[in-house]
Image (cartoon, rainbow, N blue to C red):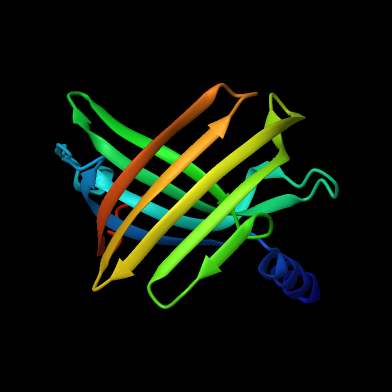
Length: 165
């Protein structure tokens, strides 16, 4: 019995958490998005969780992430998404009552094929929250991963469905 309590305590104490918010995607780059037949797949999400892919360059510990996943539309049979990774423990966050800004331009470790690889991570995220709507812009660049781009978005806060994995 004692072992069960100790095991439960250790498991509960681990910093493995996930906090998800769901949004209906209204506009991406000022364009309406086409919805597909499976309702939960049409959602954009914000997840706050401990990363299993990104690690601090010096301590080599997993980073806490703020993951913005934008649903970019349905084109039969595919659902499109674009993910942006911000970190709660590195980078610069600025918050006011309705607006949030985040900026990072530094190297982090990315787990790739079971090895940690140093990659550059540049992200600028700006958004405003007002009356259940989230409106913003995100720009990103990584020379090592050959990724760059920019998206604007307008989302409406909704409840996350129970059948969402």
